Image (cartoon, rainbow, N blue to C red; front, side):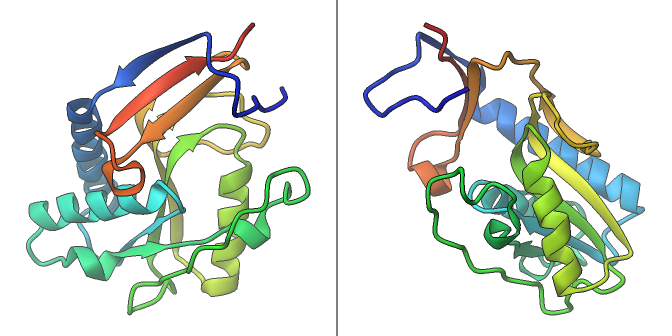
Length: 193
C-alpha cells in the first residue's frame, strides 16, 4: 500500500481506545510483567522511540507503584533502532533518537521491549539486533499497546493492551500527550477510496 499524501485524508476514523482505556491497559500490562517476572528483580523496560519510550516510562511508574523497592527511573530506558531497520531506503529520513540504558545495563536482565503498535514485526526485529550490540539480556519479552496483526516475521507480543484486527487499508494511530500534545487515544483510520 502506498502512503497517503499530506493532502489526502482518511475516509473514516474511529477511536478504539480512550485515555482511560489506555491507562487500564497499561496497568494490566504492568501487573502481567510483574507476574511473569515474579517481581521486579532484574527488570528493564526498553521503549522504542517515539511512542514506545513514553509507554515504557508509564509502565515503569506503575511497576514502581506496585513495588516500592523499585525506582521507575532505574528500570526504564530508550532503545533507538533506526540504524538496524531493513527499510531505510523505503522510509522517509528520520533522525535517530538517543539510546539510554539504565545504569545497571542489560546483561543478565529481563528486558521488556515496549512499543506502541505491533504490525509487521520488522521494528521488533531491528530492536533485537540493537539489543545484541548493547549487552546480553537473560530474557527478552515484548509489550505493545496495540497488536494489529499482519505479521511478516515470526514475532509475537508477550503482553498486549488490545488486539485490533485491521485491514491493510487501515492505519492505527496512537496519540500520546508526551509526543502529540493531545489527549491519549488510539484511532483506526480507513484510507480506502
